[in-house]
Length: 134
Image 1 (tube, rainbow, N blue to C red):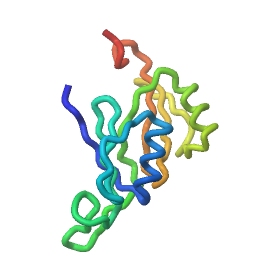
Image 2: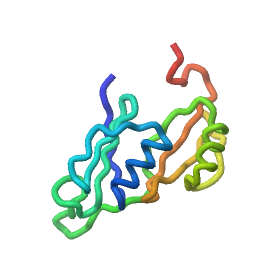
Image 3: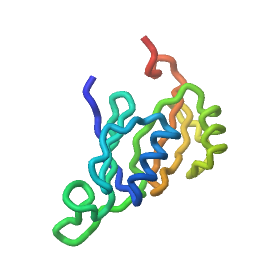
Image 4: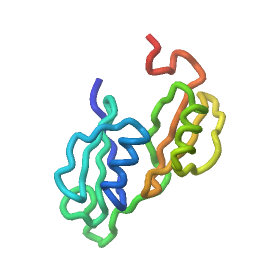
């Protein structure tokens, strides 16, 4: 399986590293500068960039616009038991954008990293959609 990379703009790279490592099970692959880090969880690589942090993903565009955290695009992490994860993350003080939502393919909830970037936690309802289904 190919590795997939997602870039998130974050206000504080160190705080984001702690959030993704401590709450969501990512490992730090590299942190070569204060404005950039690469984390991994399975086949997902998460690239963290500070806006205006020099060359790379956080630099301003030619028209002057600067990338910023937030928005609604997100990646989804599949979990075995959404209710257990929600309780664990609430107890740890993680911010939620809303309640658990029951959808056609499963249950989901949006949490926010320290820069308000959303992460979806998803529990599929059908066995064939689960990552561990064989």
